[in-house]
Length: 357
Image (cartoon, rainbow, N blue to C red; front, side):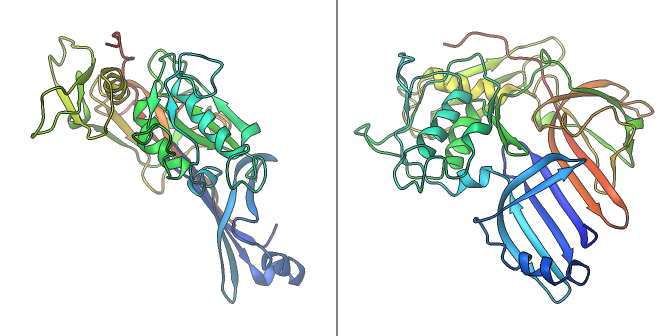
């Protein structure tokens, strides 16, 4: 499409990604311009293809037309979850697997919440109206999650967007979500025991890099408690981590005001927060203007936020090989300079060792 002058899109973990395309109206022609003028937010979706492969898709959220250009803005399919209010009970405590709302991996709970809301829930315009359910992909955590958030009578739905349930309740328990094309990926934090998707060196990065070793984010023990300054009697805590001779004991304390949490809940929150803190995290960032080189041995299909990518830093003072997890992919294309692919990586720590209370 010769009238397409600019394309920007990204992938990210535990957030909604965005895409923007700009069309030069003068090159588009009257017929194309008329079709663009019919684009309706949330009635239409934007689909982006790279070498004939679908790499991004989601609902149009806004269009902007000037005298010379027409711009389409969109968000990925998690936007449907951000614009759909939960109408189901959240009582995932049953040990009976025949119960749709049974306890299990947090990824399974997340999928069940989506399915119950989109298939036959109150106020639905039709079963799975955003067309998400066939495209859910799960990578389950082996830890069983018991999750409950209801009214005092255990019969009240929590009236918030589904995506807020993900962010406020399930991500702290170990859920990671992202999108690839139309797929909604419900995964878990990667550890050093997971296989790497690619092995890169700094030669595979065109431009500058920044290596940051952040002691403030490091920890050997993570404590989560529901104690407050006013109330310590009858409260509980959870702790996870492993003390090593390298650091000794470096604690991180997280206080939660959430009600009804058990010691197991607090342990889950501590376990999820511990990931990536030991060893002290060493993050690698490709600043704006830098990008992956064409020679990088990784495909767009492998660049899924959350996966493990190992990087060997040579020619730097920090000459180490470090396992990272991919947090963001930023892609820009324009008719003058072509395509640039930027990535952000955060460190992967040792997997948690220890039993729940």
